[in-house]
Length: 105
Image 1 (cartoon, rainbow, N blue to C red):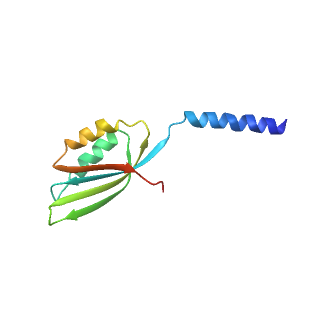
Image 2: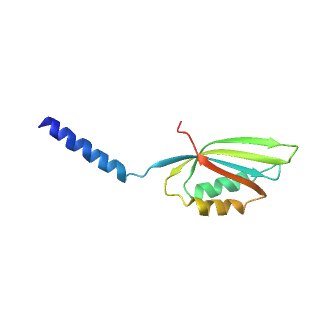
Image 3: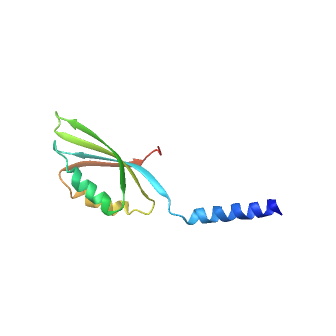
């Protein structure tokens, strides 16, 4: 009976785990046509969608006058990515967006 009870409890936990919201880890790279990118506006957009920024890398290319931000993000799986990208395209002189799966640290 103890084995049966353990199996029932483990099965129940497995079913509950499926119902819990899951986190998604992604990398967002944004390239702007200027030396001062609108980082505060990007942070505001991400925060409004409850996306947590774990870390931000910054790259400056003086020859091409571009600034690149690479953001390590954590969010829920059900984020409306298309709407989010549309909002970011409206900010500054955005040259490129790259969104990819991130590694969990």
